[in-house]
Image 1 (tube, rainbow, N blue to C red):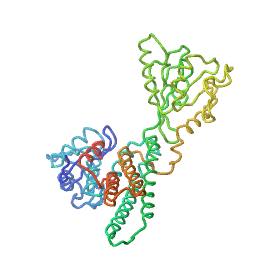
Image 2: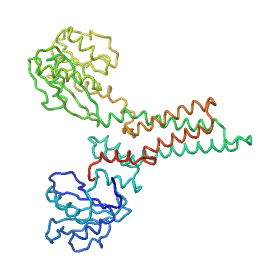
Image 3: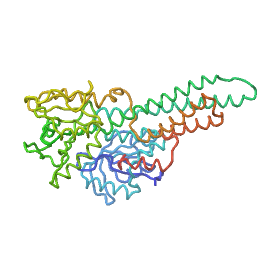
Image 4: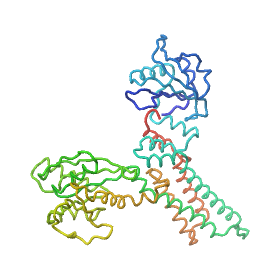
Length: 460
């Protein structure tokens, strides 16, 4: 439960030991609370807004707790739109805890997760999509993720949604005007013009929905599993791609008994590699558990690297693995190409030009750049289409857009065929606008807001 008249406090920097910890206050009594605990050459009530002042924090017995810098920020030129205070203290967890407890004893309340951002939204400083993008920016692992979040924070999505809703409202108004004058046998606006406007809206929504798969990839990364029979070179390739020894390498088959994972970045996108245990029948209970996990990873992966030993004739075991791989997104990798080849063409299927095997020798460092280029082409083709544009990556936004898209598609079909009455058409367009308004928070419920902001950290 959020009490907007409370003054809230929380640590704004990550918890743990650090050189500096920033303690944030927001609410109507922020300045007066700081006045009670801060001693310096200038009283907090006389602070110039947004300017740092040096002083010390003292407890009720006038005992110094820390030497600090403090800043008072006057409303509404603050993140939350309220009076705000930030205290820069030394970063000891014990030290920070003592200061926060002192501030609470003087009337502040410990903030709930996301409460600062929720107040910023409720006070009109940011829209809901911008608030959600703050979490994406904080959690960004790559430059491309951070840039996409910054685009949303800067209001890019808000402006798109605003523009679409304005056009929906204009369409509704034109239809209602035509309805109001229908008894006078006047043609206020051509039906074709309204259909053209609605088709333009439909296409804009469609473009946003179309970017979602790329957005999910940018946000959550790509899962790639290395599949092949034991001792085909999966662990060696895994270690080489990650440039670290993640997997145990041994000439005996079955060395990898569990799924080993690692992370690298390709074109700014996180790629999660999984070195799977050889999928085979085994009496070893531990290895059997590893095989089961491997099958689960195989089913959940976005792409499979199907490794085949080029120095050995492929057998029934390879065929069984190919049957698991062939209906998924895959890359055939011929390993150990420094040795004499036992086969000249892939025996299990006629591969298309974009699926031709990649020949590598990890030992001699052959073909690794070709493999990376193939992964880029195979996995990131959707991303390249949006490389310099905003992409949709929020599931809540996606669902709202889908609903608007579905209703608008139905409206266009019925309106074109004269199979919908004007009153129903206007109501359907109102529903489209409401679903779009859910994205920016112009249409919201307290329950939805609570769910969204509960995902934030305490001090944000």
